[in-house]
Length: 252
Length: 252
DNA sequence: TGTCTCGCGATTGCATACAGTTAGTGCTTC
DNA sequence: GAAGCACTAACTGTATGCAATCGCGAGACA
Image (cartoon, rainbow over all chains, first blue to last red; front, side, top):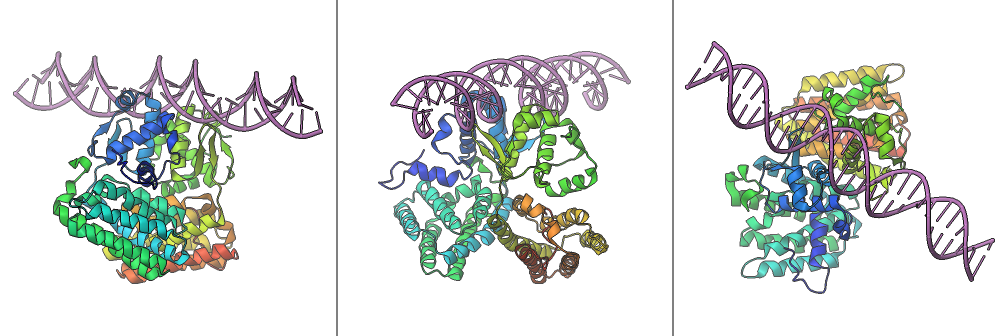
């Protein structure tokens, strides 16, 4: 699942964990903690689309599948509910959240506001690791330049790219807030809906953002990031058209 | 301390809970739900400052105090941890989060971005209940115009005011996000720092916001709200009351 | 006297048993 | 045959018991 094909730099699994899992603080401790394991596993199933929208998540079933009791499963489900990935109905259970076109609108509206702002802050402060961002942008280049773009490899790189910029804004809450709205199945696999043209433009944006950060130009950085987010939104809408309304994570 | 959750300030806490808690749906159903009661009670204690920063919250102790077992207490603590009110240390317990000036800066920076934006959206859509907002603003008038301003009464009104505007923006996630960052003790317990003059100025802001909403003028509405938030922030930083009474309890 | 180690108390993490609630199903009755 | 009702099964909510872990202090040894 985790593409281990990366070179001598940071391990791919580490990148993936850091980018897709903003709430878990520990990385390797998941082996011994039942609640942590349950959380990671269920979350992964939802984000991967293995659990369709509206599907009931039974505590007992999940527990036996994971080899733990209901208690840690309950804890995991409550965490997922707090993140908005599942909805909890009293005395009835937990079901995977459904995502509609309106949800996408809410999410990208917020990103249009928050991410450019955070990028401007990062450009002002000038503490972003532009070498790392350059490296990430180039790796996305390579992943996108092949005959068939490797979206599975681009996604975690893109996550890390955006996350690092927000972290460089100096506002830790901003990172959490954006992560909480972005970590949904439809957004997680934005790149799978990109056409080749959109994909190339997206990766080009990354390079321009890095340049703006290097220039310590907050207005430039903010503008590019805003274009970046809006173009992603447009790509999602055009690719899926009006049919996005019922496009839950169940598409595969 | 009090096994009975309702105390002499039951009325105020009820309003506060209703306005600051985006997750609880009903109020009367709490009687039969131990986890909900535990969550509300512990949260209230933290926001009221009865639990100091860094203080350990023991599951057993809280359970006996509330007349429930550890299980619902654990669930409540996990919810509070997800909201950031407490921090959870593995195998050691849960302690109340500490808040610094930097936290305050992060919060008000985010509010400066998010609340004006939501207000502009609300002005565009024009679905805000301006009658209700007028009513709330006038009630805040009366509560602030007395010889000694009743900040305890203004707080929930202010919460409802801000929350309703954000709800009228049409972006449900915006409401949740703002509530999640604003619901902290540091913001909640800053009443006493504001003099009567500041309170009246803040109330004046409210009236102007309502007027901008009535006029369906998003730019006006956004501007006033931004001034509103910024003045509150300035007042908090200077700590001499020359701002507004904005920084009341958590608005949502 | 200082430091290291072992053991104990306290607390959390997890499992399991029990109670309460909900939805569905089949029977009864009109 | 249809509608209403009671019963049942499944699942969640809560309580409790047990194991694992951590911190701290007492005691031993240098």
